[in-house]
Length: 218
Length: 265
Image (cartoon, rainbow over all chains, first blue to last red):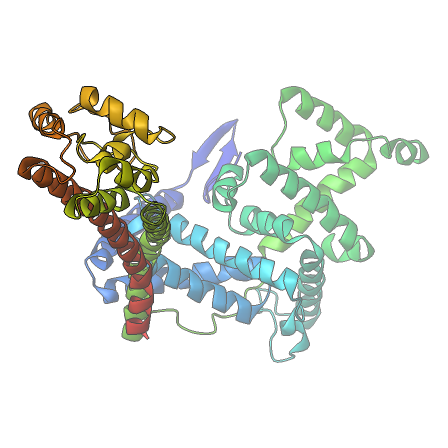
């Protein structure tokens, strides 16, 4: 069901455009470079590991932020993830370094989620802080921008209200593009559990957004 | 419109959500598509799911607040922790091993000491040694020796105390004495700490010498008794020392992590 970026269905067939082919080649090259960096890091070269961190830190921060929805906690989780990755570098068994780091980061995020459940904190400090605003998109009109901010705020609050596991699954599926089995592997649960969490999470999200439904109906 | 709204409550919303997530088989897909075609609310649900998913994917992510590369100090600390992880797994095992060694050693020491106090092999042989050394008669020496709960492995009729020590627990001195000649040299030791039986030849010599009823015993018998005594003492000492070593080794194993932790600090 999931299609790669640059793929489209035409006449019942998946058509891949030239740009998508280039993207795939770039991804393969990235994977090769990652594997080489891991090998160097295993030989004790810290600079190789730091290069790995530089290559993936933005992705991991986005991934974890989507789950924990708190900048500082996301930063802590990503830092922990890199610490853990360095500590357990020898346990890397090949495959995508990006996925391996993603799994470690999601685990760190889940640890934070559990800790937060025990000790609830102020949700969305970003929205309390006027200096932080979502980055402007293509729409330059103030009205569109205000609408986009309002939509983000409403959705973020609704997401925060979801149970942690449902939110994590939805973010991994919708934002990060993981498929069900990848999420199941990452979160160490059954595929059926992942599907159930996503489906029920979507329904809950829709109910939570019901009062402001017009914001999302364009 | 009203009809649709009324029937929507009976519709399977989860089926629509599953259709959206691509989690339906062919039959379910057909049913869900029918619902989308017939029910406006189901269609609205499907559209909302798409809009929400798109909005979720487009949620802004704030800029990364800092660089997550590792410093040399971080790396050194993590390398120590990495070694610590390996050590911890060993530690869990060493705790169990150390505890077991201490427990076995302690039980062994106590058991060996208790046997000695109750008149174990060494006690019995010490008595026999004394009786031989002071030339006590069989009748006078026997009662003392019968206190030995553990039978020992040598036979000497002239030294009834030794015979009594040979006899099983509960056997009378007389029975032990009379049966001693026939039993001489037989491996009668049944005690748990029994010294290996005296060879038959020695036993025969001892029995022969004992036939003259000389309480002091012949030089051969004395030598045998002395050997038996020293063997009994040695055995007890060996057991005691062995259990003591086990105990100390266990303590050592338990102490190692504490010493290492102090060094790490």
